[in-house]
Image (tube, rainbow, N blue to C red):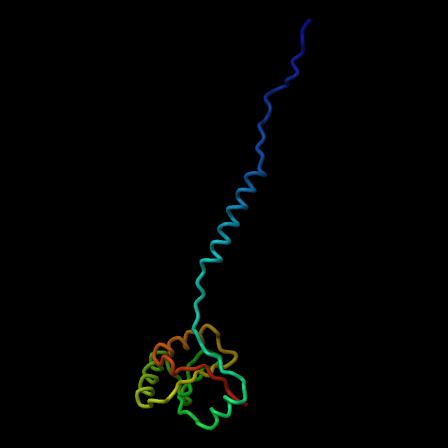
Length: 140
């Protein structure tokens, strides 16, 4: 009596992908966490004015001489209706601060001006004027 061979042919090996996907997700999560903790945000430290009534009356009583630098919506630098480049602005700020010992420089940016340009310009001005540079707003 002959026995029949139950095996019909070579079977295909199967690869289980679930453990490999688990490892890949763990590695991906590790690198995502690593990149979020190693990023260095670039910015300029500024002191925002307080809104208390006492400080407002003090500043109104003793007006300070200040150079007003305006930034229009197109990102152009304007001083006294004259458009300047960044290099010209730095020269004017240096000259102004040397002439006026207690003078300050204010950057008044249009709300539509590019934020990156405001931060860049404020950083350049702060490099020249140190603690005598501030960010201002236009009053109505």
